[in-house]
Structures are given as C-alpha cells and as structure tokens.
Image 1 (cartoon, rainbow, N blue to C red):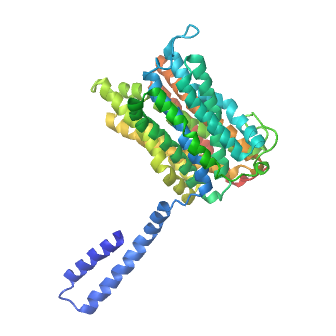
Image 2 (cartoon, rainbow, N blue to C red):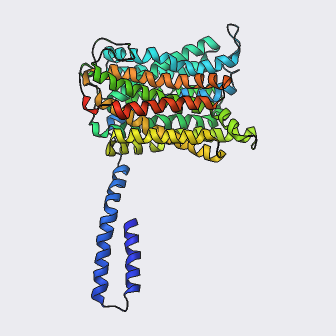
Image 3 (cartoon, rainbow, N blue to C red):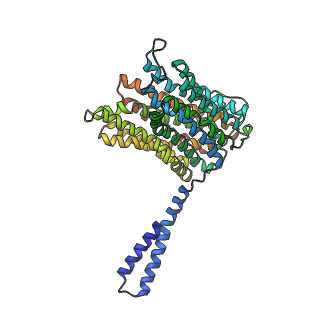
Length: 457
C-alpha cells in the first residue's frame, strides 16, 4: 500500500513535469519509476513481511502460555505486598523488622533457583516433559492461592520457595522446546517466549491492580490461582520430548562446567557470565536502584513524587522492551548473526550507561537508561540463542539449568550489591561496577569466543 501511494505520487509528478513533453518520454520515465520502486522497496517489504509473519510453532505457544498465565500470581505480589503487608500479616520476625522480610520474601525465589534450576532437570527426566508442566502449573497456582490463605513471614516464604521451583520447571521446559527446533530461528522463538512471559506480568500489575480495588486481595489471588485450569488445557496439547536425547542421567551442580572439555567449557562459561552481568545490570541493579539514582542526578530540581513517577515509567519500559521488541531483536539475531548482535548490543549498553551516570542532563540520562533496557533485551536474546546453538544435544538440559542459575544470581545480587556500594560510596559506583563487568565480557567474547566449538561433546 505504501509503495503504491509513493508510485502514484511520483507518477503525478512525472505528468506535471512532462505534460508538455513527448508522451513516449512520459511513458519511459514512468517505467523507470517502476524499476526504482521495485529495487528500492522490495527488500524492505520482504523484511517487514517476515517480521510481521511471526510463524511461531504451536508447540512453543502451548509451552510458554501456561507460564504467561501462572506468573501473574507472582507479579501481582510485587505490587500489593510492599504497600499492604498487613493483609499478609508480615510483622517483625526473629527480632528482625518487617521491612527486611518484605524484601527477603520478594527475592528469595531467585536464590532458591540455585537449587531448583538443577533439580528441574531431574524432575523432567523422571516425570516426562508434559507431566513436569502439569506439576509446575500446580505449584505455581498453589503458591498464588497460598498467598491468599496463609499468613505470616514463614508461610509466605514457603510459598515463594514453591514458586521458585515452579518457575525453574517452566523456564527449562520452554527453553528445551525452543531448542528442539531449527537453530536459525532460535532468536525469534526465544524473543517470543520472553514477550509472552512479560505480557502476563504486565497484565497482572495493570489489570490486576484494578481488580484488587474491585474484588479485594483474597478474591483476586483466588481468581489468579484458577488460571491453572486454562494452563492444564494448554499443557494437554503439548507433545512429549525425548528427554534421553537432551540430558544425561547424572545431574551436575557445577556452575563452572568442569564436566565439559576445555573449549566448550570456556565458551559456555563466557556466555553464562555475560548473562550474569546483563541480568545484574538490567534486571537487578537498574530496576532496584532507579529511584535513588534519579534523585542523585536530579540535584533537587524536581520533587520526590515526580521522580517516583518517572522511575515507575522507566521500569515500565523494561517490560515494554521485552513484550514488543523481544521477537524483533530475536529476528535480527537470526538474520545478522549472534556474534554481531552481541558485540553491538553490549557496546551500546556500555555507552548508554556511561552517558546515564555522567549527569550531563537529567532527561538525557533517563533516555539512555530506557535505551539500555532495550539493548539488554537484544543482548540476552542473542546470548540465549547462541547457548542453544553450542550446547551438545545430550548435555542441553544440564547446561541450560546452570546457565539460568547465572541469570538468577545476577538479578538477585544486583540490588544487594548496588545498595551496599551505594551506602558506602554512592549509588553511581554500582553502575560503574556493572560497566566493568559488561566491558570484560565484551572483551573476552570478542577475542576469546570460538564459534567453531559448536556441538563439541
């Protein structure tokens, strides 16, 4: 349609310019316009058409949608727990103030994944792919129902631990399903799964908050737990995966991959630490410290209330980046190559962070923070896809579980390290640490990563 409008406009100009000329010349110019338009826009049209035609296999959709539904119970807790902790009866426990326990409850599910990520391999091996998804749905919905029924620090922590196990199974399941397809589409499929997951969280913190006002906390949590029903229906459509082809009987807890030969181990460890650094920065440090960081560069020109609003919008862009651009960045990764995408994304991330912490201009820093979130989606999509490509089939589940643990540790330690450094040295120094981490990863990836080690056992 766009090309047609352009063509019509140019042809009208030809008629105006050549209306006193020979009609034959007018026809020749029109034919030239046709050729120019065809040559100039055909490639762009094809590229746009391919992006629009997502063409996600239905099996991937059936595998990721249950997580998109069940994760709503986890996401809503981040909104209602800090401001309504009295409903959950979160009080001083073991002589420690309730404020500590609120933060601990919201973060414990990440730390528990150090164990649950590895154990999820064993669960899928023993129960099978589809039965493990049923179990994850029950655990996830059960934890949401538990938030409504159980009260007090100890019981809510137990519910968070259960959710941690549920999420580990969900994540490993969709990763295994994605990496069972053609590697040339890994980026697009990984981005799609990320988009679905984040979209579920977005619905929870927007529509969920509205329903909280209308229904109350108990009824809302009960309603979210009932999402286990459509989740079960979706899981029933999932086809089994031959687990024996993608995992060995022995589960390995070693995060440094000493059970693999040197070249493969070096590549996987480099991608894992890259994932840790990106997650440390974008999922941990930046989101947790965004408000004190903005206050530090604001220099008193704006009210705290306005800064809080801006901080909320910036965090919202983090999810928007995942939802809208996950598939797009994945497509670019498939089309232009993992290596190029990883190097460009991480280099631009470094530049965005440097400008953000420079304090040159407040709104320029905000813009660069938002850009950093978008670039992190591009980086992590390519990292995930490249890991899937270089992981030997027989080792894939064990490698993925440990790789995911690196991601979770980055997101968990980001806020802790950021605030610890901020208390003693200033909030900027946490971002300087993230700069160093990403730069080191970029350096070693550029000069040490060997793509030729793909599928080495």
